[in-house]
Amino acid sequence: MRVFFDSSAFAKRYVREEGSELVLSWCDQATELCLSGIALPEIISAFCRLQRENRITPLQYRHLKAMLIADVVDAAVCDLAPEVIRHSINTLESNTLRGMDAIHIGSALALNADVFISSDARQCISAERAGLRVVQVSSNG
Image (cartoon, rainbow, N blue to C red; front, side):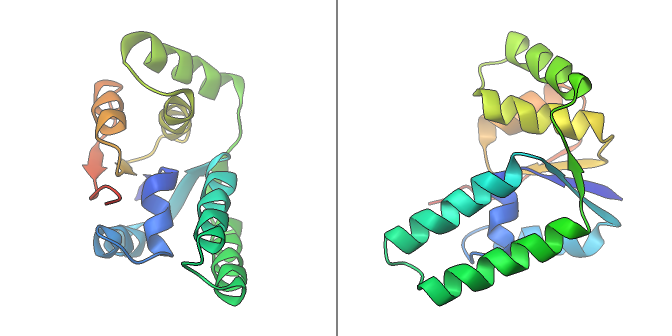
């Protein structure tokens, strides 16, 4: 099963918070992890923020980054191909959504994901309208 994670959900694989157990369960069920090309910089940005806020140490940051990069090597990562852009624009025209959230949906559609996982309620509604099977994990507190 091809399971697509947006950045908000996939970050829960590395930083324990509400929704992490559900994300880990979906990772175990997946035959292929699917991500948008924007996921890596978005998640690294979150790790950097945690470090700046002294919520993780520099050593923990390096460990989280190494785990993320190791996982991405085996994942299906979707680039910003014309198909992704087309799906993203269609999603933006029919939903109230941020551009990056639309790119995640466009990427999931281009990758023919079986399941779309996010912690963003608005994005989940938009993904469902686009025809994706959606699982919403708990949002960040």
